[in-house]
Amino acid sequence: MTPVSLFPNPIAHRRDPAPSHEAAEAISASGARGRQAGRVLALVEAWPGSTAGELARIANDDPPLDRVQVARRLSDLKAAGRVRIGEARPCDVAGRRASTWWPA
Picture 1 (cartoon, rainbow, N blue to C red):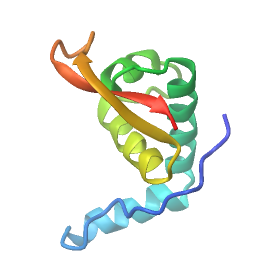
Picture 2: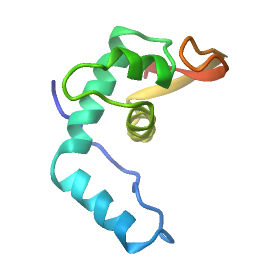
Picture 3: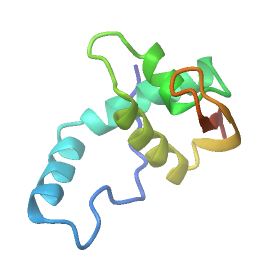
Picture 4: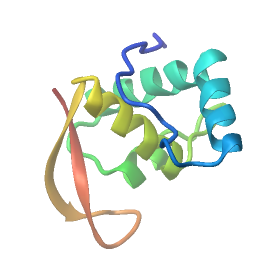
């Protein structure tokens, strides 16, 4: 899986506590953020129109990605112009309306 390295958006907000900024730096510096984004981008390309929950269900390989991790990387990918949000529809996992995700 090819890591994605285009991250114009910060993942810790200015007013977040110091541990949040430390964790944001660690996930970015370790390369985990890029690897996760690469996996999520590949999932969106393979299953366009899926929700974050559905993509997380698909990403149950080693290591698995949970819905929150998938949602965070989708946000990164959207900011980088790699994916876009589509129409909301009932999610097969959550059972409520959720945004769909598409390659940009």
